[in-house]
Amino acid sequence: MLLESGGIDVWYVDESMDPRFLATAAIAIPLLRNSGPGWQFAWDNYLDAAMQFRRRLKATHGIAIRKELHAVKLASGRGRYRYGKEQFSRKAASGVYRWILSELGFLPERSIITVVGKGSPALYGHRRLEASMYALFQRMQRASHATSRNGMTFFDEGHGEYRKLYRKARIYLPTGSRYGGWTAGASKNIPMGLFFKDANFKRSVPFLPPDSERSKNPFVSIP
Image (cartoon, rainbow, N blue to C red; front, top):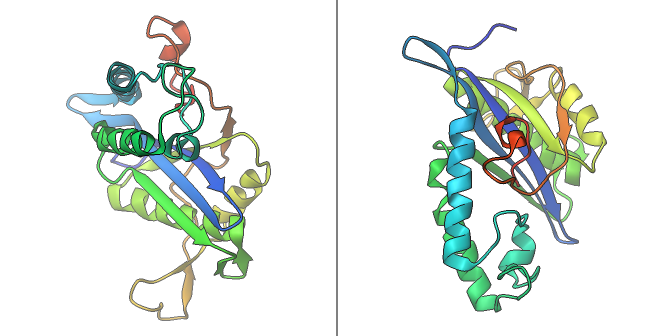
């Protein structure tokens, strides 16, 4: 696999589900870019921006920098996010949640991909988790192709089947056409050829103090 002209992105993938819905999401963080005289690591710039975002979140809404964010808890007024011991009211919690979404402008344009399935959606013979994950993989490959970038994938721990699905998608990933079909049929095999051969697992951890040596590690998970 040759290095693409656009550089390398690190993709963080996670999921959330309840009896009715399943959502899978991926965030692309620039790792390597060719800017100016040569290749430069860009990841640490986005870590700094993320830390600044968490400081603003603490100053504005009292949510500690080291508090891991879970959208389903925060948006519903659970999790004791306010000063680490108090609950937000449901109205206040939804306002905080909207504020967080409005502050994600430090991420590159079109760097967040979300797939939501209701009930048991079917996709090329797959259902629920597999169907949602394959749909996400399709969009990750399409986004990387559009920007001429390679991708390195990290999954949150908890689902060992992710690696199996990822490995299959690098070889065989049936993909539909936005125009209703391909010349040879309704789908076409467009594997994740722009992505590294295997995926990685990384336990989600709270943000670290800015003077921590681990904060310089580009593979510390950002919740």
